[in-house]
Image (cartoon, rainbow, N blue to C red; front, side, top):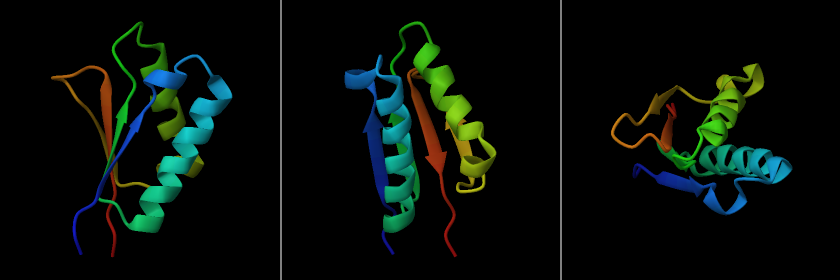
Length: 87
């Protein structure tokens, strides 16, 4: 199995709340379908509100059980990585 990586760039929809949540749901579904190892979510640096929204989404109980761990990129504040483990 190749280690697949997916990317979701939220820059274009930073101010469209319902579309943000739908995009996050879609990328999680795609990661599961494709058995992706990693999802990179680009939320940009800005005020940090979009990143907080992404982290709140990832902390939801129903979402948290779907992935292995998350990593905030300390070199680039505007990115969050979601990692999956597949059996």
